[in-house]
Length: 276
Image (cartoon, rainbow, N blue to C red; front, side, top):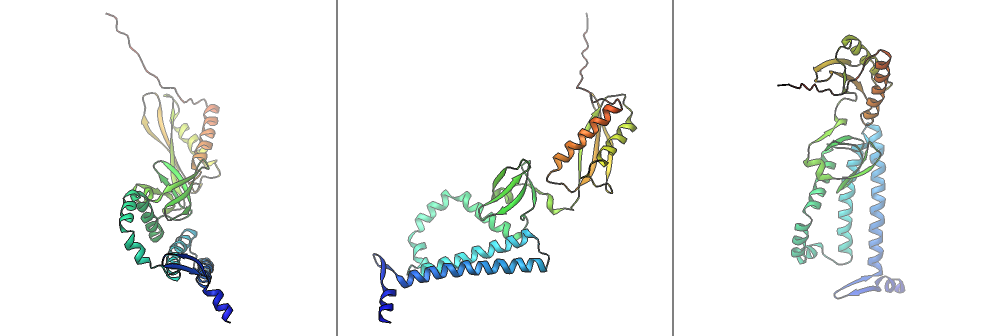
């Protein structure tokens, strides 16, 4: 028994007034293992609860992230206390250094605070489709400083959290599952307007990702300088891949225009020469 006590009290590291014994090292490892085990149990409990109450993936992820950060902070404080280091002394002794670091890392702290806001408010969740400065991305992960998203070109994008909380962001996932989309088409003057409307609506209906029971409508919206301008409106649930859907519908329209002798004009300018 005495030999065990001697082994546990043996100092591995000595630094000024501080030392690290075998017993303290075992406690540090134990705190770390218990923290990992606790987080694993919390994750399992949240996943189980999410299935029973139909909690979406984004909400359960946000809840777990908040709990994880709190648990690790508490664990870190316990580890410092175990090795004989008071967190308050560290903060007091490095106050001037922290002020300097704070001034240099204002944007980082802003991103971290924004990350906490996102996780707490759940205004943006994993799986949401966002339009940020004209770039449409699907959120794959929300971190404490940055969020990870995938663009329509399958490019992984790291987004500072402050960009989401301080800028104007469109969250396509916060509205109804189906969304109205549109694009414009110009045809030559003299074309059969009713036939053009019919072709545009039929072209949209033929696409498998367009909801047939919802709005499908073509409108004459303007008399352009070189063309009659139409707009086709349709509903789809393919929010993230909608540009591919629009491209497919445009190709169907081109085929039908060619079959019916309808042309899409080039821009035209009339030049009048005055002879004196």
